[in-house]
Length: 345
Image (cartoon, rainbow, N blue to C red; front, side, top):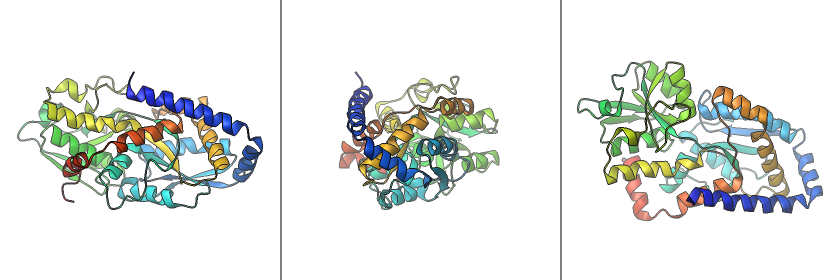
């Protein structure tokens, strides 16, 4: 039995117990429903408009508003690839009126590396559920001479990768990929999100982008980019013809370790969190509303049409995965990853 399966079994048992406990207090549930009725709830996105996380938030917001009987407003708060917004959420007023869609992979990595601008703790935030976990894809510009991993490994090949912040997902994914595969790379930070990086690739300013498969599929199908490799041990369901990095190259133990390390923190996927300390009745009501929204057949169908897939998992799954990713990180491991992801710090 896999660790992830055991985590999900445990989380399911905890969720069932929580549902029973809150089900015994209908008056508390009524009070929480009354609190949310007619209120404005801020749905925070830590990157710019137009990227995958922004698209997910705007797709989900109406369904969540209906479940809460409230107005859910999407608010983009840029800074450090989403870490600034996550810091704010972690210290906001614990009234249950602020939630955030979080890229769990870079959020965990930022905490793992003890970055100075990290003020949150993924294991202590109130988790509301996993929207979806997903594989990552290596894209290149549509006019790039690189068409395979072997092309990128040629001595005269150099790739410029776009990123938001050093642990934003695209940038750390690029850093680990370039190190593991011995590529000649330059990573350029400062973009607002994957949409801006994809546009830079179209203009020829950037050569490559490391991004989730849902966003990658959009860029590939629009003709804006081409996919080089799925950066996991399984092909993407959205891009089934794109071989994995493991299929394309014979890797030594060290190379495989780096690529598998990046895979190990991908399971967090897109998660929803709110501020620690939200009153228990409100938190239970908010979690129930999130589950109602994310399991709504209409939302799931809408996501499938736009290839923004929704595959809800209980809050306890996200918390357990965060604890697993962060709890066993030794100082040696942290330093090893820091040297590659944050070489100038």
